[in-house]
Image (cartoon, rainbow, N blue to C red; front, side):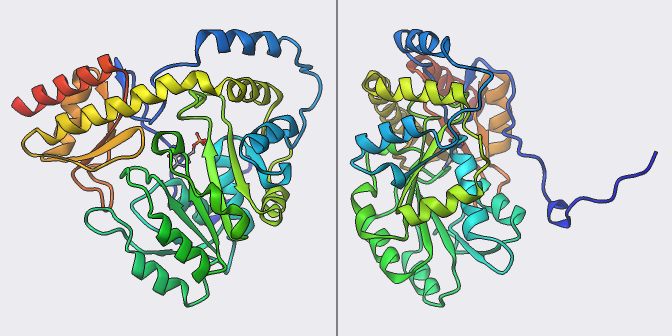
Length: 354
Ligand code: PMP
């Protein structure tokens, strides 16, 4: 048998993406919605999926879904693009705006997928780390883009895993200071209720990323979307896999979006629970939670890696960042149901007593 020659050297230092899923009673590590799609919406999905022609290719651009999302946001269809999760669109942005000889500006610590995509597309990365409290070093970012070599920037708002929004006035200054594509990743928009959407028409270099994975309980289905100027959407559409958004996902997302009001009580409950968790964590000695506008809370705790283990032994899975660059000593807990959050708090208290 012949051996196989080596893969692209750009892959040498990469590991396949591993969210470290482990079985647990309280699964609070992936920023998902703790509640599944409401029963009546599931039923409506089931009825519609029955009519899918499985033997036919889907509409490559998911135009029915695009129209629905566009209309709800006061946009034209050509300002919207659906993707196989926000992740696919982030990769497409790296393909379209990155590449050899091109440069991505990142604001770590943030969502790890951005730099993986840059590496996969041989894009240079310039980093402006956040300050100790994880706020953006705004003046450093604005000064850096003056050099004119940045091709795209991603600002996560709220930021994952740290939880804070980017300041709107800063984003507007950034959009004026550079012709780089400025992607505002609003994956957690429904929990922050703050968006750059009103500024789209005034800024041809603004793109906004959203997802169905969080507020709309569809992490398992894979659906994200992008808002941008039609010229940006057209470039991203060029690199997109032809049928990445399959027929079933298009239907599920359409029915869910049509019924989005039914998710509101769940979103409100998560926001209320986030406040309660924040207070409880803040009242614990030696625990420092960072303010969050999303559906998770990052917190610093002494002996974080051991605390993670003890939480897991008690059936509570949170995300371990204790050895991650710029996040040393931190864990991230997704806001769950009241019962799951109580289980987490009890386990954390027990873990710290041992
Ligand atoms: N952006 C951010 C900041 C995220 O946290 C996530 C999910 N982890 C995504 C984008 C992508 O979400 P999805 O691919 O599930 O739509």
